[in-house]
Image 1: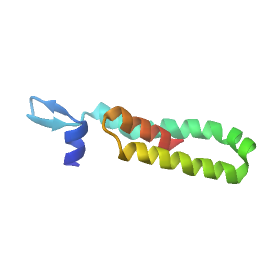
Image 2: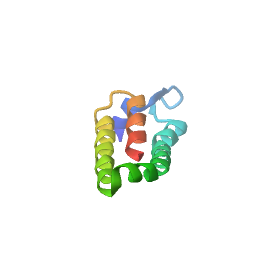
Image 3: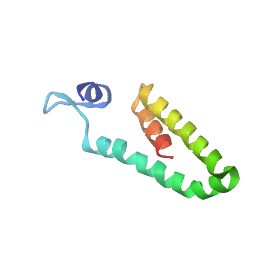
Image 4: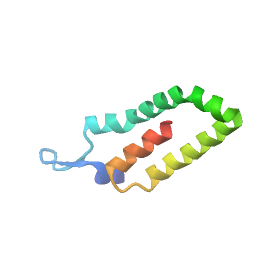
Length: 88
């Protein structure tokens, strides 16, 4: 956790240390739900176009891409993008 706070946190002059604000924590943890919502909306269309097997293969590819984006991130925006893609 200290590495996460140092990488994504902000310096708080009152506490004189790096902290992750509650709004940033909320964004990082809840953005995956937005991806899940979009994925649920697209699931029927994808299932109709690609079938069950194609849909599962596409889902696996999207999960790998989302995980790769999260692991290879260098900024908060890429972490959020990876979580959004992972949710789909």
